[in-house]
Length: 70
Image 1 (spheres, one colour):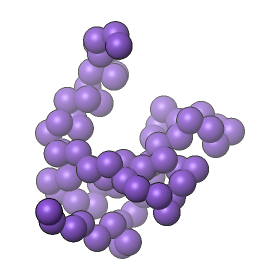
Image 2 (tube, rainbow, N blue to C red):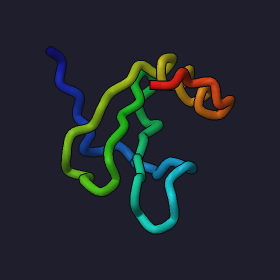
Image 3 (cartoon, rainbow, N blue to C red):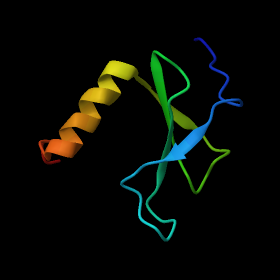
């Protein structure tokens, strides 16, 4: 398993996050092939890593409202 050092990446809150600090995620655009995602309430906790193309597909589906129901 490859270890990715996320200690130097710049995090930004999702534009879909609410203003009171709840239900927020943060993402980083610093890695060309990967998109790290973390819970903004737990910045020192784990981050999920997504392939950039997969993340782009997910964001597109969210914006279009075409995610299948759970």
